[in-house]
Length: 231
Image (cartoon, rainbow, N blue to C red):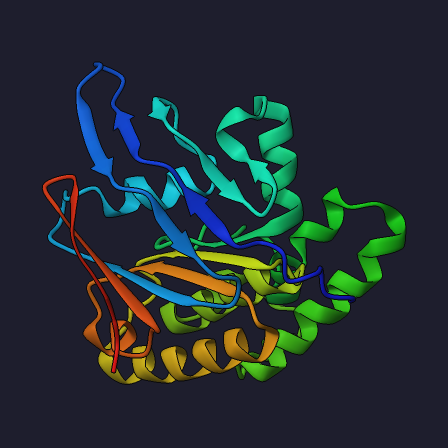
């Protein structure tokens, strides 16, 4: 599938995010992230890391400021336009997989094809199968209820990558995995992301993953306390 132009640099203004009760839960300074950068977000539980990630995906209400991917400020979009932008340009890896138990691995990994024009469906299915093969997952037809946690997460990663989106966001992608499985997944994921020149932003407590990123943001008590590049 053809790659989109490398025009999805991220630029945010100062951001304030408020909860449903009106209380401010996150306040961040302006940030700039170049297309193709690998960004780790770390900090204690409850600090606002996932809130920031979901705001970048256009999944948070109560955001004051701008979040501009390339020429598109997703905060200024309508809900429908934001959903379309996310479907077209953002791959998501969730901590809890969000797979359909009754479907096989390949059907889960290529689920995005169901929501795309007919002309694009075959390419997504082929891409999903290729990523599953790269991640060491057999695409034979068996339901995901028979897969281990590590296999499920690899299917979720293949699903996020299958549409060849320029942006990949991940929320604790190794949290449910044992150390050996997590290390293998980190190696495979970083290799695939760098190969495709995707912008990869991951919230994680996993230092092994954080150490592989180009740049690390530390969020504590709803504020950015450190922004540094890895050696």
